Figure 1 (cartoon, helix red, strand yellow):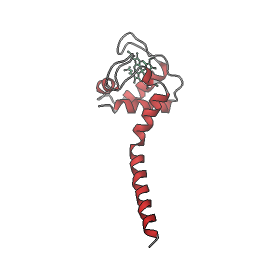
Figure 2 (cartoon, helix red, strand yellow):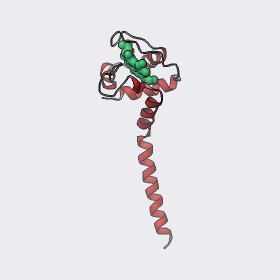
Figure 3 (cartoon, protein in one colour):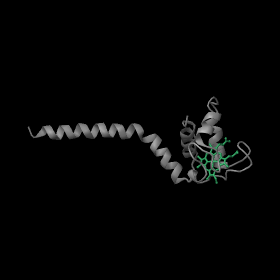
Length: 109
Ligand code: HEC
């Protein structure tokens, strides 16, 4: 008898955990973008200093080599793809973090 409420709340906890886990990659990437200050120059839908994530995603939609190339560019910095304004090197990023962020940016469609 007494076990029933316990079982119910355990089930609820499992469901909640599943929901949190299934949404965590996007949330984690958004947090990473915030903590690495990408958001100082980038916005999801509009140009700020750098291009919008949706514009980047549209441009590289059919480019299977984009993740690696863009991860390199984020770390090294560069200009000329979107205008004269350069992106400074984001050297506080590991290669893995850069790829995670690029994959997340390319999912903005
Ligand atoms: C100081 C401003 C600034 C910051 C901070 C910044 N960016 Fe950028 N970003 C730019 C600019 C400007 C461009 C356009 C460069 C160009 O025209 O080649 C750009 C371009 C890009 C591109 C597209 C590159 C291409 O060749 O198409 C990606 C992807 C990108 N940024 C990701 C990031 C990520 C991830 C971060 C955070 C780790 C970040 N940026 C931080 C200014 C910034």
